[in-house]
Amino acid sequence: MLQVAKKRGQQISLYQQDMTKFRINKNYDAILILNSGLVLLSNHEDMRKTLFRCYLHLKDKGIILLDLPNHKVEIKENNFSQEHKQYFFPKGTINVIFRDYKNKDKWISEWHSFVREDQKFAGFNEYYEEFIYDPKQLELDLKSVGFKILKIFGTRRGGLFNPEKSYRKFYLCQKAY
Image 1 (spheres, helix red, strand yellow):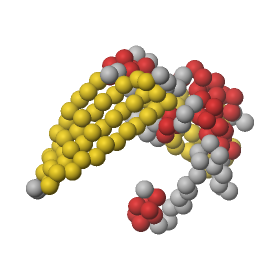
Image 2 (cartoon, helix red, strand yellow):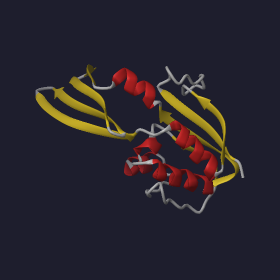
Image 3 (cartoon, helix red, strand yellow):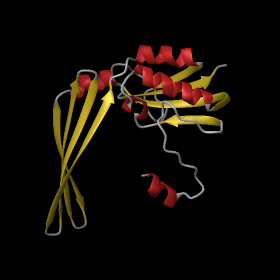
Image 4 (tube, one colour):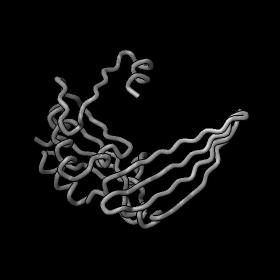
């Protein structure tokens, strides 16, 4: 992915580091952690370490935006679900079976894909594992690291967060001190 990004945006600095330990000699006005990036970590301690690294790399009163799943709703509505989708493209089709389920403290999503293009078949599988975080613990960690939670949203466009209905949870926080 880094190679593709370098080809598309040669003026962008890219880094490949462990997010719990990253060090860049630069501070930023804002840091975004999108698409559930934080829950790809294994536990709350690694999440807290990552938040601290972000804190260190923000300018005074800098902003961090976290995009996280609301596992409470995901699990309630989709635990042990299986769904099939078919996608069409000019020379063929892709059929995907999606499976979602809870396994201990992980939310698992498996994608089994079957491709038909012209007279050829191919297939591939994708496996995603998210740590089912405790929102109260995350909020304590944000505050202990030095962030002030400014707002919590329920949609990418700033809609209200509803703990019983929102699939996503967006934290807008500011470096407090």
